[in-house]
Image (cartoon, rainbow, N blue to C red; front, side):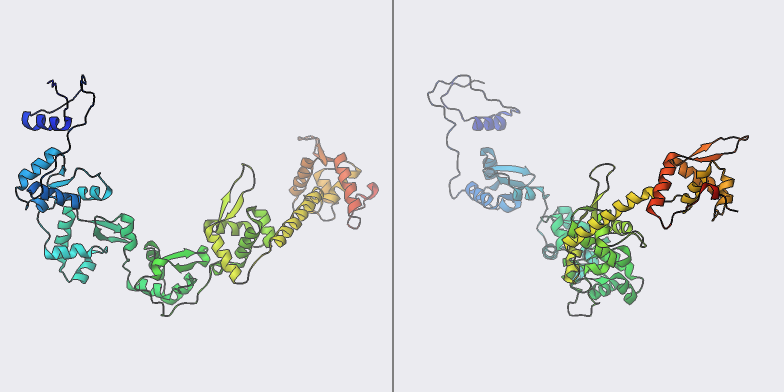
Amino acid sequence: MEFDCPVVDATRLEQVLRHHFGATEVRVAVRAVTSDKLLSGPPRWEPNPGTGAHTMLEIVRERGVVRWRDIKHVRNSRAALELLLMDGHLVRVSHGLFRDGSRPLDAEIAVKQREPYFRGQLGTRQQTIYDALAKPATAAELRQREGVSRQAVDQILKKLMKSGLIRRLPTPGESSEWVYAQSGKRTLDVLVDREPKIGSLEKATLRLIPPVGGARRAALVERLGQSTHSALKRLVAKGLVEKAGTPKRQLIRLTQKGLTHSAYDLEGEHLPGNDVSAALKPEQVRLLLALDALGPARALDISAAAGVRSKRAPSAGQYLQRLRMSGYIVQERPMPGRAPIYRLTKQGTTAIAAAKLAGKAMSPNKARRAVERDAADRAQQAASRHYSSPGQGRTPEILALLESGPLTSREIQDQLSNPFKFYRSVGLAASDLQKRGWVRCIGSGDHAAKRWELTSAGLDWLEARRAQHEVQQIDLAPSEAHHP
């Protein structure tokens, strides 16, 4: 269809073609413009005041989204609705749901659009249950709060859920119950606003925990029995308490949710409070203080600054691994093949702050000096390790015996002042000396027995040993090498 006119309202033309001529698709194209000024169309039509269309449009603009039941009382409602839909003042969202066509689709309107059509008004009891769910609750709590029977509550909840006005959510620690809330609330808000339901043993456990610090897990079990372990597990799942410390010295602390729970009594009887550092052994506290003073450091430096040596049982490495598994420190590997670096976590910083309040602290300068002394000691040990004894203290004597000439393992065993308990140990000690290059093996096989001969490196080591340890040297002349 072609039109020759100065002004064309494309929107109005499309509506006329669709509603009066049954057109399914309309495309408008301008082939030529003969006017000097191109107009977008005439002003948008507005209904006259006092008419049903004007009243209906005012209701929709005030609310944003309305249902048919809210505007059907208007005079000539159906004719006014068709007219407003045709002119674009209203937009049909779904069956029986309309919105203002001049407003953008904001979040509030989108939420209302997702609500399915609910036929009929809510009854008095249904409205009461719906209003009560402004605070999330379970079906059992609704029965106790509103005084409604179980069957009635279940029927009302099913009807409200079917209409989309409410929803149900599972809560942590209460897998057997559902929590109901109004549809407009976010999931996180529902779970935060919800006060968990706890049993009698959980209430008794919660009331014993002090508001400041925490209670030892062993003390709670001693007071209430072995069932406290399962009660604590449920309280942790519901977010009322949290665990701190290592598994063997665990501390139970209240969270903000547990402190504000209706079952908790601030004025009641509590167990003695302990800080976070009380959940750790003294060696672990010293390791944390040393790490705080040094900053990110290796396990060797941390144990040196803390004064925790590997000779203790358990060693410093085991203490550090327990702290890492408990969340006090983290382990980082800067490069493959390098020693790992340890850093404090937020939980570790909290434990250090508690230890400092208790009067435990470590100076950074003192920690660095301890690390420097330990490094110097290790360097001295490494320098003297060259003169260590692989043969359980018999190396100098074995090398002195070999100064007279090559000997077999049996001859060495017979001439030692303190012989080995087993004959094979002589061969093992000689093999270790051979790896160091101090002796070498001459002959092998069935016809010739193995003989051990002193090398120049072994002779140099023996002379250095005698020069360094004059008191402990074994001065054996070649003629006196054989002991009767």
